[in-house]
Length: 282
Image (cartoon, rainbow, N blue to C red; front, side, top):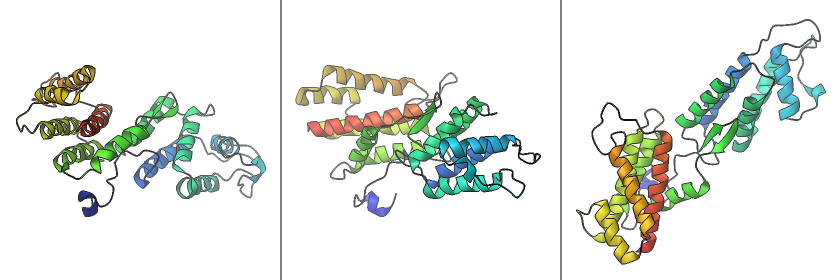
């Protein structure tokens, strides 16, 4: 974080890539697409006949870009010039395409019937890239699907932009976000721990009891601010999850299942939303 973000002068940008693709993610996706092209045989054939790579690139040219087939690049022998076509796609991918058009292209490749790829493997490769770069999307059933909405992202942004007396709470959520989005070594366990700590810190702030547990704080807040009993129960259940799963709030044991990106993202969004809710109550 920059100095201006730490002191609240400029917005803190969440690391989840919602409605955007940064350069690192774009590079990862392009490398997978290049691997895809390499799967197709590009053996030179006699005049006018097409290699497997010719066929898939012509298919992309006509069906994805909707270009006239007679405008495709050809070499002096009348065969499709695969090098120029891939260069053409690359220019579009890096210089022209909007973030959503890149995802259109990924879907097109995964869904294509004219393919020699193992769809499960390539879907896994794409999803691995999306996960490593903290994208808010995932490929499910050949479709790029949001795993975070603009409402969820806004919920995180709202509390992180608050500075007046909420710095310690913000710090927990910023640390949770940092653990979640660390490109080299994400720490989902500690991300969840920091997210629930933000809720605890909020409850302590509201009750003015530095020793208050989450359960006690929720009970006090319910008396003063009319929190729905079902919502109180849900928060207790989430807190119970962090006490019983994957060494989040206790020592690891051999049978523990490590929390996933989805678990950590859910907790960050849920805890941010709950902090915003409590803040609005007081």
